[in-house]
Image (cartoon, rainbow, N blue to C red; front, side, top):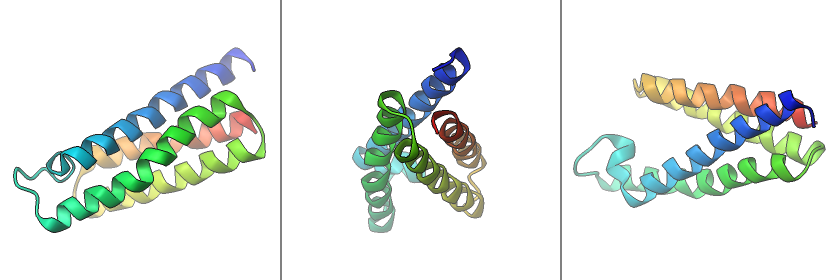
Length: 118
């Protein structure tokens, strides 16, 4: 792997791990995700649903590009990028610009890494 590819894979790993950790925080403290000091049932439910998908996908998107190259890593990273892109839309609709920015950056990084490991 070239130095450029190594840097992209490392950046991807950091972003994927950060996403998984944030989802774990949301699982334990749903109010951190919703911004509510006393989250409702719906806010807790959403945080749990978010965590159930984000933790395993974040961990896989972190580890797989480090351990392998090729179609599987490429497809997983495109999948992760698609999920982050959907999160951008959710954040925009909810008026959460900061979340949209973070998810947008993760979308771009996952997509760039997908190309790098293919």
